[in-house]
Image (cartoon, rainbow, N blue to C red):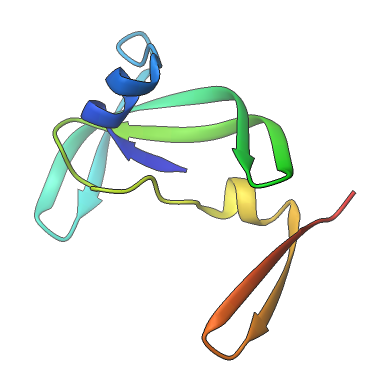
Length: 88
């Protein structure tokens, strides 16, 4: 999961004490913080203890789901629609 520091602040996620790291983006290398989210919920699917990175600034504009979340769900590609189902 990746999100901007703006989104993290809005969601009440304390990231400043996370593991400082450099993050490669389309705009270059920017500072970020590795954190573990207590839970991530998408629709009816909820996962716990998901690793995430908070990138300083206002990008990405939307929270991005990464493999730390997606590897725990079943993915189905239905043309222009991707369906997520809880694996467990």
